[in-house]
Image (cartoon, rainbow, N blue to C red; front, side, top):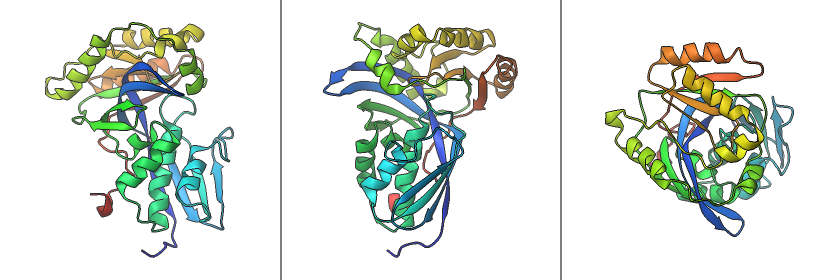
Length: 294
């Protein structure tokens, strides 16, 4: 394949966790079971061939630009020496539990493979992605997916439709590494998570549980009690369910009607420092369809 001499401008989609169970720890990693859902909140990434290095520019002043950036790690893993200029227009809150960094890394893998005609298969990119970050493989597939192991074992579930998620971020960042380091094993109720899985497999019934258990929620809420306040406010505005996404601090509320979600957003955005966004599920996280991936 010939190397492309054009730029790529791609969407990089966010996710939420529809429940998160931590099953234990093996070495440096935690074994988890979680359901990830792609949503229509996105960053915008632009890629242009340039020189021999990767140069990262971002609208977010605090975003790492070197080896700490997952996009840089993706470039180093896939095609070091083939220079590229990456511009990231951030719309996904940084450190918000919405997978922005992992999504950007997955989009980078996909883009560089296409931009430079590398010919990597989907399975090869999934393997590379799993070495960069636990959530990166998910963003090479997207939709509604049951993730296990470190997050790299993926089982697609039926698409989730006909619901809306109101995202509420209280205005600070939470370190995923810190949150996992504070977790300690407890005999939590696995039955609640199983009920979540069952409800998502049988989406025709549109009956969702009120609780989507996240084992990191109590850890984060102990340090940041505002998490519980956000959930209370969401329930008070009519949310059918509410839960922390990943390590937070973003909390989502589930609504059946767009008007109800919009009305709740109008109320909660008045809270000091709170960012709100009404989103809906999407069935894929890929930037576009590519016949080589089918």
